[in-house]
Length: 320
Image (cartoon, rainbow, N blue to C red; front, side, top):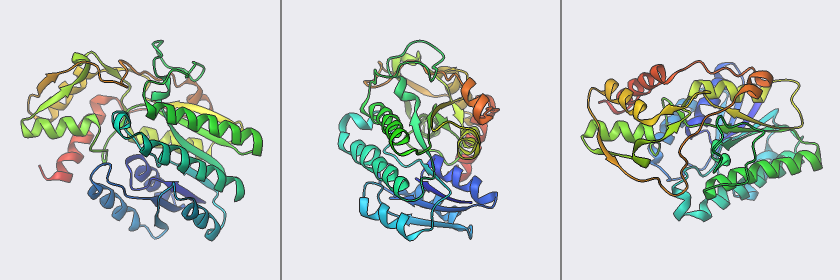
């Protein structure tokens, strides 16, 4: 089959594209290789993808309407579209709000419109656990209200779900939103906790631990997330509009994860305890019953296995 995957130079997009290519599918990737974090790793991911003969990358900005329309016009219709390109990061949204409106709203609208006018392929797109905002009832269920976002990033992801609902209702398009819960693993993002902590610990520098360490996260290994995404792309019998949680279905104490990192790195962390940051939440925890039932999603990687795999890759990638 022929897939469009946006954000293939990014963390999750790279892994999804790799999975599809290795099973024999054709993948067109779209990415703008922006400098939100060091583009070097984006180029490294892309170099691995371009080694596959059935992969082609288009360097373009999702918010460039003409570029997106041109891509869809030049290609024969895509069988499925997986939109993983977005401006990520909760804290960045506090000071760079326009980045989120362009990438996560304008860019997303361009994908919706292009799908609408070019065969209406199933659209699977990245939402986020951040849409649960101020929700304190654990675990988070897709049936919970999600109208109390505490960051602009979260608001943009909730807007994506609402926009998808409109297009599914108005134009009979099938849309599947996936609320990711703290994804980590090899080829991860340098702005996320696992990478930041590993880098600082190895350098003997302090790590910033927010809310004085009283934080819980549903850390989800990237291979498990990919299985959920592929399930969303391939599973028959889905409704016209769907939203699913994709998480590990357990909430880990942040201090326990730091202890795992210390063990794998063989060094103790210098901990700088700080208050809760604006836009942050104390705990996340995914109810995945719906994804189990309809996508066959079953995460199998506990942090005790996932963290060592990440550190092994991190050491190899950096030669440390």
